Image (cartoon, rainbow, N blue to C red):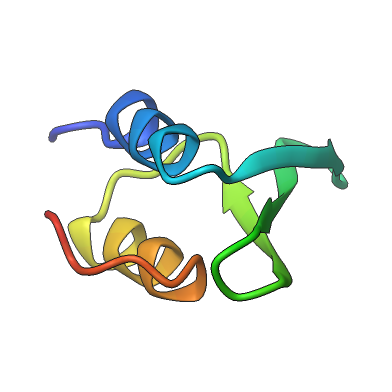
Length: 64
């Protein structure tokens, strides 16, 4: 099963998003300057649907 974490984080950083703080467990809270909102990123993303949902919350188009 493919893993989307690295590519997802690279896309988020390229769009200007940044790690806001560490969340509970293996979750991270990121901030998107495009939407002005914070969103959660899991450290183990195995589903392309989950990866695309994170991109949507960040205000980016689907990529996976």
